[in-house]
Amino acid sequence: MYKVKVYITLRESVLDPQGSAVQSSLHALTYNEVQEVRIGKYMELTLAKNEKDVELRVKEMCEKLLANTVIEDYRYEIEEVVPS
Image (cartoon, rainbow, N blue to C red; front, top):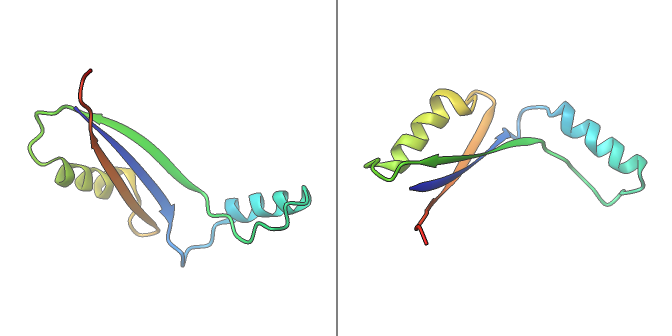
């Protein structure tokens, strides 16, 4: 079994109104040291171990469904889960 952690963020060139709103709120709470906030998504997938090329499959999932590659970047981490 594999655990896959997928991180999706807006591309730097894309405006992030939600991140700007959070930054403004943090400043209103006097957390003025916050210089920028970018909001993204985090997902965990569990895949059966019988999959032959996990990395290729995860990349396909990201490009076909999980991320909008026009405006978002993604990265992922794959961990093999060893039953105890």
